[in-house]
Image (cartoon, one colour):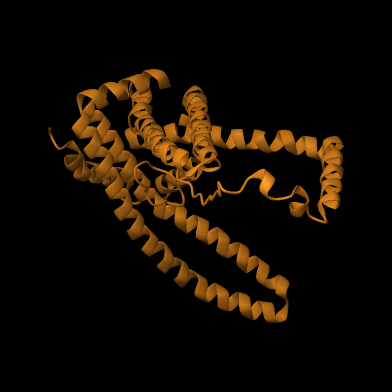
Length: 320
């Protein structure tokens, strides 16, 4: 075991310096735009055991002593049930014939798929920009196919997560004993699905970029690396999680402090303008929102560049 996860901490820092220093507004702006389209602007605290929020809360109770025959059916009828049924029926009927409803029924899922596709493609753009140490939006055209593959993978994983949640919830409506049996299995499935997502993002995607592979070949390669370098991969996962946590805490402190300093003068200006007319304060609110987004994007640049550099350095060492 070569302790690659520790060695690459400093190497990734040096690569990040080479990319971002000396300060070049164009380079930082291009990275900010790429980060915006990857959806990593909010920094997000890393979670255990997998990246992203895949947990769920449930507070279900079931009284097995209460049966359907123990309570008269009429005792649970609401006096408003007929009105509610009529309202739902009328709303459903009007929605089914409404052109606006049909348009939204197609438009909303279509926009959601498009956004997922764009973020999927820009993950490749971000990796390639860090790899080549030069951000280029033009990389987008080179990874249209890879973006489709990664989008399909993300949608498939989301469906599996939903299915797992459903499988966990159903036993909770039957008996407590069935829940005690199924919940550990469901949690294990969450860990497995999270591990698959982690391997694809941290190893399979770099494999697709470096060797022009498809996502299946990239995932197969990640499994081979996991089998041959299990200890290194586990340490890689832990160190990346720890680094992300420490960076997130530091960035959160900087962001909160900066927002407070930014909000004070704008609040004073907006308050004085609102005394004249409330509408005069609206542009101040818009300016504040734009400044907040811009601030978060530019602060995210060194953070994301470092994390992607760390991933790529680890990938390069693991495949040697």
